[in-house]
Length: 507
Image (cartoon, rainbow, N blue to C red):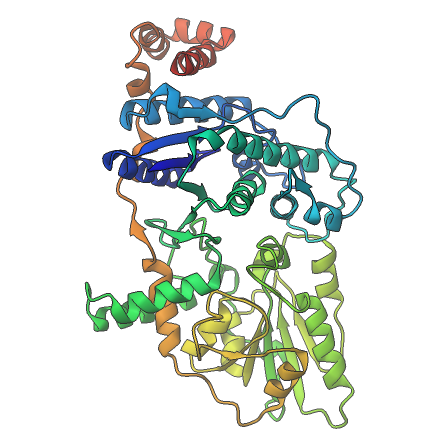
């Protein structure tokens, strides 16, 4: 079996850990494995962008981060996993003779194909994530567009160069961003089997999906149902208790932030919502919005929506404001993670008005759970609050797509905007059973396989240098002598030694 593992930036510890696990599993079976790595061919890198404070800055490469990433990952591949130099494949650099097209609209970018392969979806996904904006100005952000375009083309050219290897399987992390989505589309066009993978919310597990993206709600439902009903390794009582505890933890905020689950409860500690002057004689509906950019970055194929959230809310308010003796009032809770995001969509949310609408801004300390408790129904477009509402036995309506979309009877599903109006108006609409909420809560944290060597990337630099007899003495002197340390820093010798090791690892 011939396998390609496509890797690019590997600075987050779970990335090299999972890549290494996949590579090792195939080597142990005697398969031929080639690992695609970035040796600074990518025009931009997500890691320094994620670390920078100015999120409006164009994506870029940080030289020190770039060198360390190459140095450590190549060392792990060769020293820890035994991958030969010949099987470590550098990304093909973007050819100087090629030029980036002069795009004028986002639709042009989305539809763009390079060598019959759509690379536009991945480029747009990257740009949306970088700027947290659905309405990207492709001319204003030309530099960012060029960088992500070149990344995607580099990925395609690399895969083209490996055609003679005749891969039976390709592995890609996430599969959403420019260079990674390009590999997904390449595999689709060339009928090559591929798996994409992602880490579960626990950050202790990872899961693989075949010939789709990790964000596919159908795949989540299939695995969550299997874990809850068919996996007999743990008792059903344990699963139920675990899921119940997860919802309690989410509600009361008894957990620390992690990259896949930010604790926003600490920003919403005000449980007294008398300031909203809620009229209990009316039918009070809570509307919880997700981040439009996060939804749009997944693409319409995986997460289809009839309208943007602001459009849907505007239609709801228009419909109910026209009613004589309207019995309904809506409380729009803007998600706290939008409190520092300024774009067209957040501006539209703030500008929504109506006689039957109260807007609770993103920076409001009012508790979303207190709002959930006091309202009669909940409307969501993908927010986790939709399934949480079911757990807390509140009537929950989903208009859009979410990870719980295909967990049958987890929420009431609105098929279109008119159906949404009907569900809101139905006074006999009852909460769904909380059973599917338990399936969701347990599956979210137990999906996939446990990561075996999560600390593989955390090995000390001394260990890496010590494997090269020529360069290790320089490193020891640098660490032990302040005088030598000053010289090393002045001459940038640490970077030079890293680059030298990278050079030797290739040749």
